[in-house]
Image (cartoon, rainbow, N blue to C red):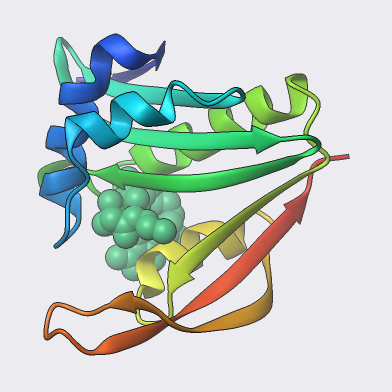
Length: 150
Ligand SMILES: CC(C)(COP(=O)(O)OP(=O)(O)OC[C@H]1O[C@@H](n2cnc3c(N)ncnc32)[C@H](O)[C@@H]1OP(=O)(O)O)[C@@H](O)C(=O)NCCC(=O)NCCS
């Protein structure tokens, strides 16, 4: 069955939080998602298969820079193009909102996400030391990546 992408907001905070918990060791609560939507420039997309949400992306546009805050796809739906659909639509939305570039941080060990971003024109420009805490409680560096949108 094919996937569709829908633009969502504060009313979808619980769905976003549920997906985030399923995709990351340390999930964000629905209250954290609700608070994101109080910020100007935050937008989010959900990917559905039928009526079932299977993936999300959330971004924050500040002036002309769009920060990809998080994205994830449920394990059973990975490698089926959902992450790519979400990323392409988010890039398009950011561009239409006036962003000149998209930036993000990704765990140095997360080769799946890095490959997805590199394939679509993101380039590494810095490393943030000890940015994340790994599942074993140890600090892990982040790679900062960016892509020009114009
Ligand atoms: C990263 C993530 C969002 C990718 O979602 P996805 O729906 O599986 O991605 P897609 O199917 O659209 O993959 C697009 C391309 O990205 C690359 N890619 C995706 N997963 C990959 C993997 N596990 N290993 C290597 N390359 C991968 C491939 O080039 C892939 O194209 P291909 O399948 O034609 O080879 C997903 O793995 C995920 O949710 N991971 C956990 C959360 C996470 O890491 N989020 C990103 C945080 S910055």
